[in-house]
Length: 238
Image (cartoon, rainbow, N blue to C red; front, side):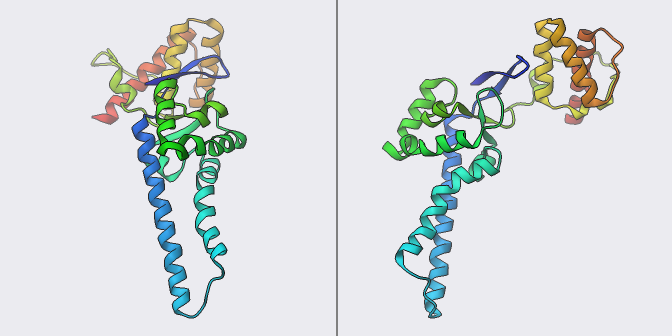
């Protein structure tokens, strides 16, 4: 399932929404981290007690275990650009619905509402909401205006496109290798739009990104960029 997101430049970009399975597996990895933390705290306390150095009251110990576990999702997502360790392992990330980085308030809201999503009925509310919503959103995501997407497409763009390049095709711009699959996907949408202003804006952006000066008609230049990218990606996969 993919999610169409409108960028600030009004260019539609398709993000692949993280599946329910991806999110559950990421959650299990995070649970494993919680378990390791619990064992570490218990081990430290056991060693300290055996050495005759008590580490304080039960309240302090409870806080040392519970507070890091409670704050882990919020702090990780805020400082690691929308990812916990589990999300990193599954290559998924929290973003805003407009494709921008989520704000602290958005992370805070989805963290608070995880009590509803995950705490009640063992996560069934989250699973059902994601399945029904169509945008990969649980209740916390709907409230925060966020979703969870894959950071890498399941299949490389070059594998999805029939390049149709001639066997003796000669690329014009070797610096297109600085671009990404996502950049090329956006360019294809710009080319398909046929919008002169959008085409010209894309040309200026590409000139800036790869350090070239375009002397061709904007649409033809962008088509050349796409073809050159396909050529180099295909060559690297051989």
